[in-house]
Amino acid sequence: MPSVKAENSYHVAVIGAGASGALVAAQFHKRVHSHLKLVVIGNQPRPARGVAYETPFQANLLNVPAGNMSAFPDDGKHFVNWLKARLPGSNAETFVPRMMYGDYLAEIFEDTINNSTRIEYLNATATALNREDDKWIIQLNNGAFMEANSIVLALGNLLLPANPINFDTAGSAYHLNPWSPEISKDLNADEPVLLIGTGLTMIDVALSLRESGHHGHLHAISRHGRLYQTHKPYQARPLSNLPKDFESPLGALRWIRQEIKNDEKSDADWRAVIDSLRPYISTIWNLWNQTQRASFLRHARNIWDIHRHRTSPEISNQLSALIEDKILVIHKGSLISVRSGGNDVTVHWQDAETGDCKIINVARIINCTGPSRDITRIQSPLIKSLLAEGWITSDPLKLGPQTDLPGRLLNANGQASPNLYTIGPLRIAGLWESIAIPEIRKQAAELADLLVSELIESSLLSSS
Ligand SMILES: Cc1cc2nc3c(=O)[nH]c(=O)nc-3n(C[C@H](O)[C@H](O)[C@H](O)COP(=O)(O)OP(=O)(O)OC[C@H]3O[C@@H](n4cnc5c(N)ncnc54)[C@H](O)[C@@H]3O)c2cc1C
Image (cartoon, rainbow, N blue to C red; front, side):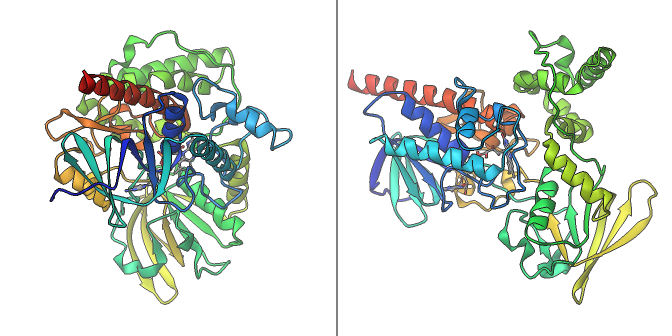
């Protein structure tokens, strides 16, 4: 790329203004170094909310109780205190609408920007990054350029779900993006809908459709047909050390089963066993080699996910009511083909239990299988340019880009790219557990420490 004149210069540019970007800015603000400048570049109309907390539906609740949703790792009651002032009767066990959590994040971000002369927000899309004279040059979709010493990619999930089969023949009845407001466009309230997947996205979409007035039949299909478990208060039993069994996925499974069995005798809850592992998940993930990780993904991922990511009791009750009333039918099997005919799409699927080929007729199909992580398939010009230049590289299991433990992106030779960091969902390949607020808030604080210390160190070196 020819040399360009950057219009603005920053010490740090955070690309992406969802929860991760907002929390990095808030943590940076807490570290008082008056000369360090940071810009957050975000491309949604309302910053800080991101995809998860921008939802317009009251029925979309947090799937984590308020007590564990503080934005700050050193102030665990921050969200609950904010909430109590706004929602009478709420407490640490309350599951609030996600839009309300969006208000909380937006307020934190607004305070950060308003109370700082060195932190700015820019509404734009970053389309490419190039390295020049020890700086990153950021290209924006409006044709402008800016430069920064360090970059934080806070881009969220980025990829839409993968297509389990070819949907070309379904035409406009098929929706790949479950978060698009278009999913219910031109859908009559009584027309049947097929939701692909039976996880948290399926639940979200089913309840959003109901809230927007849809009352037709809903079908949901997945290979195992398993629904996510429900939260319930329990007596925590934190681990003081990681047991040795975790050196292999099989050992881990044996340990979990045995602990749950032991606890059942004392009436303790399995949730306590699962959650006791959460602080150790990235350590466990890093104990496993690629073959062991692949084996986990193939054999244990689904069962782990439905126990680890749980729904609120309210959501669970609503889902059970839909199932009992036969409005929502869960199918266990796999899709074979779809064919559009008039207003209907005929879906052929294979029942996992009987092996029979069955048919469902629906007016709409919505892919709720969750985001794909394979960055080699990505449309984002920014990620494409970083991959093409070799600044980032895909994890062999296609779980995202490769990163090191502090969150630096690794280049095609496996070395840390200079001053190029990431946070949140793009760290899954390196940490496994990296998408929810309890992990993101910790990463944001650690990243701010690292950025500030590296920037100060480099400015001392350049002035000596
Ligand atoms: C539906 C849903 C519900 C969830 N519920 C919970 C929950 O209850 N509790 C919990 O702890 N976690 C939950 N999560 C996990 C969630 O991933 C995190 O809580 C958090 O929202 C992730 O924030 P993020 O900023 O990393 O990503 P995002 O929120 O996706 O934000 C990334 C932002 O970057 C922008 N962007 C991307 N590329 C560019 C570019 N080139 N230039 C500029 N901007 C760009 C995107 O448009 C987006 O605004 C949920 C996730 C989803 C999807």
